[in-house]
Image (cartoon, rainbow, N blue to C red; front, side, top):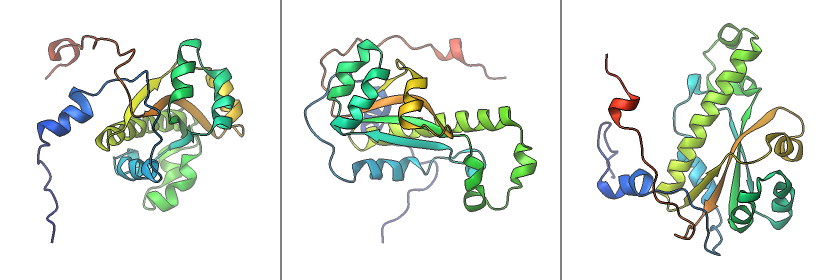
Length: 202
């Protein structure tokens, strides 16, 4: 019987390189489709990451067909068009403004009314914050399964919402190309802030 890895076990350097240290935002893609079921496998990993009261507000549309790409095209900033049209898939990461409808299934012992109190600004902030967290989990899971990511905020969110989320319940957060990246148009890695610049221990 395979043993479950205990909590606190560190990943090896290869895993850290793949998910963080050597991972890059890709701008060019091999002409290679994602194998069937891979997006589902990535989601199965990503959904295990924690969210507030297990609320899981992220919703995703994966744009993969020529017809869907043509719908997305007008909403893209000019610099994001070619790489998005070439990517095998583009994830439209959105958040569900009515995520609380799922709470009886996801976290039945929480008093949703007591937690949210009908406060629209609180609901929006919980949905946005936790869906962003889930999208980050998704990108790490994708890299762990050998898929490169090219995240973007250069798009018209109103146009994306109108085309892909017309009923207004879901709202796009950011988008991310997925596939097998090349080193073409790969910028040098930009500096990161040092611990002392970004963190404090008190």
